[in-house]
Amino acid sequence: MNTRAIIPALLLAGSCLAQDADRPLRLLIDRNLDRQLVELVSIDGEDIRFIDASGRAVTAPTTQFVALTPIDAWTDANAATSVFRRSGIVSRPGVLELTDGQRFVGTASVVSAGEESLAWNYARLGLLAVPLENIRRVVLPRIMTAEQAMPSLAVSDEDVLRLTNKDTLRGFIVSFGSEASIELADGSTIVTPMNVIDEMTLANPDESPEGVRVWLTGGNVVDVESLHAITGKADRIEATLEQGPIVAVNAASVPSEADDQPVGLRFEIDRNQIDAINFDTQALVPLASLQSNSPDRPLVIDDTGVSALDARSIQMPGPMRTTWTLPRGAARLAMTAELPLESRAWGNLDLIVLVDGVERERHTLSAQSPEAHIRLDLASARELTLELDEGQFGPVQDRVELREGILLIGR
Image 1 (spheres, rainbow, N blue to C red):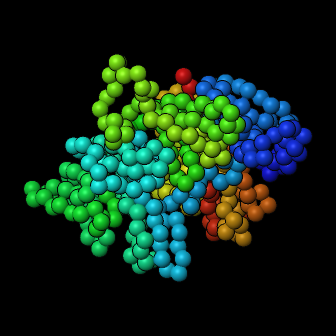
Image 2 (cartoon, rainbow, N blue to C red; image 1 turned 180 degrees about the vertical axis):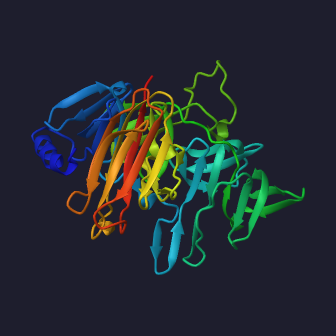
């Protein structure tokens, strides 16, 4: 779909309606992985309301769709851990990442959140208590010189605590509050004040997300139980979080049946703050999350910023062959293959798409035709293979970027 060609038509059609001035443009993806450009009006329970490209107001069940995404780049580079640099000074926000992929931009608190939990201040929800066993990474906010900035820690098979002086401690993080306590391999314990901690990672197993996942502006990724339009506020939506390990610090105990207060954390958001939604995280899987086998050279996964639907860009850096083992029930695949702009002077290649060893598509990419939109039926397939073969100028600048790769899992 040529999004750029449709946008002017949508704007013209929308101008004929008595519309709100700031309805955001988004791509709505259905269960065939086909896309349409829409103006998002609201989401209310099981319904989504939008203006389509003809200017028609539509209300449809969200079950007809798998995702809502940005109309341009799906990766927000500004949501990386270092978001502001000026005159050699780096200002970095705090980030809490959970084992299921949720992400909250905020700051750790010295308030006690209970045993083996961390207190995290997230502006939309206030002070939260998060069990350490559900945490993948904690980045503390800092203002520092460019020389003091360090690359993000890789998650390993042991807990890692990095200090602002670049010292690194490895072992088992016992507690985190005004101080962090880490037990080292030799059995000794080191206690460190929070104000000298740069970042920490915990060796907890990954968890699969369930339900609806929302990507919000600023790099926040939140699982929600429901989204509801707010009466009298056309541009506002109330989100209720999934019941899970995160609770408010002042309500860290589980509510009883006698409680007449509504259960669950809630917050209001402007519809413009919704970058993307995965309406069914069990049905839509990013290609970048799958294991692959590349005997010639490794794939390069873009891990900068935050990507809508977790569909990170994948680069095939030269002539090579890569095979992904498909999850059970994989039904359809959608992605875009592109010869990067910096490779178009000499880049000229064939991209061959095979399913279970049988060629299904072949695309020649060059400066004259740098992009291919791939849509495949994968019913009963076990493997997806891509081959990058050099073209008429040899292997020079022959590389491909795979963008927005997503798989639909049948139910």
